[in-house]
Image (cartoon, rainbow, N blue to C red):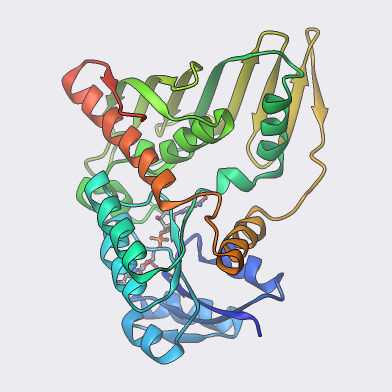
Length: 327
Ligand SMILES: NC(=O)c1ccc[n+]([C@@H]2O[C@H](COP(=O)([O-])OP(=O)(O)OC[C@H]3O[C@@H](n4cnc5c(N)ncnc54)[C@H](O)[C@@H]3O)[C@@H](O)[C@H]2O)c1
């Protein structure tokens, strides 16, 4: 029998999850809940699943094995705690919560109920990222010294849901949302944690009260230096990561691929697998459930991303470098 899955939040990311479930015989999507009836019913119709306006009612009636939580960030904590208490395994979207205190409350609830908690750090499942990690670990390009991560995306578009631009609901702007991916990527690729952070943010957006750009200098516990530059203002969209080694470089272009340079020019190296990252993410969660093991992106790991993001905002406010406890 396939595992029954329900989805809370029929927003932008909902279809990535439901399309992945469609490709997997081990999973069956049962229902979606959203307080926005039109949105919820549209997704329910597209995927032939039930619609509920109230997620608690959905879970009481559908009794799912797995719940995907794809809600605005300020609702992650209360929803994850409630769902864990119902005995459901959780795929909680990134960023885990608004702050470390909320992460700890979610971790405590998952532990108390004995359910698996995975946070949707999808960077771990992009085929080009997986390939880059094998290059780093094999040492074929020598020692990894530095990472430069660039993300530009017009963040204040009229199409962006308003909660993303409200600090109380989103926890921050482009850095909380997309910076979470950058910090995760740096930690996961290097197999280490962010140890030092110095950040300068700007608040020049046309909507809301969140930051619209950031320049962050980081150091990992493994000794790699990294720079994240993000702009949510006008310009050309970009999502690239450059890895600098002693004997070459790797360029990752999100959702496009990986290029390697040893002698003055970049050549594309195709990843051996081209699987949908959301399928790989579910496979990881399923393995953790079946083997009573931990998934690749645990709640404890996701908490470390939030701790680094808290340090980013603290560093900008105080104007000084922040050191994180990585023990
Ligand atoms: N992994 C990724 O690459 C990725 C990409 C995009 C978004 N995300 C994350 O996914 C989450 C959702 O983002 P989104 O872009 O889909 O947002 P969204 O605003 O498009 O969707 C959120 C949905 O939640 C619904 N909602 C709000 N309160 C609710 C409640 N109490 N009960 C039921 N439904 C409720 C809203 O009506 C909305 O439809 C966020 O955590 C975001 O950061 C992750």
